[in-house]
Image (cartoon, rainbow, N blue to C red):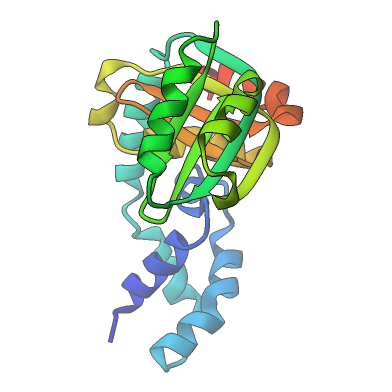
Length: 219
């Protein structure tokens, strides 16, 4: 049987952003205790006093979060320029025999286009290509369009240049995505290299998302 403190920690970590808000003193712990009490009693199989839950919440290791947050803030201050690309399209293909050959033919042909942009992400069962709209006809000619699972138009991408030490700090991507989530900005795709991070969103949200990301340094 899991201990009460572990049950409480597990529950808090299952609610987005709750641990951060506790760390910042933004949560009424008495109200939180009352809210999670029924579930805790059901899982533990016994009655629990509100005061017991409140004390357990107070003993949560929030100082570690503060330490990580400080490192994140220092890293965010060193984020470089941001680049916005618009008029993008996303194709999601079911993986099929010959897709690598078709993809190679598409990439070779796309090099002839000035200012062409594309990214490729291959998973176990599907492959996603993000392209600018000028490459649409080339892609649909070189790839097997009968294997398209979905296509999304009117997308934009915002790319951030990250400091070289970004891989040494926990939670970099989480910190960025959290800020976007707080503003109800949905993400169509996330693309990353070692020192670059790109979010793909609907073009209608690009101004709102850019404002969020450009103000990351202000917390």
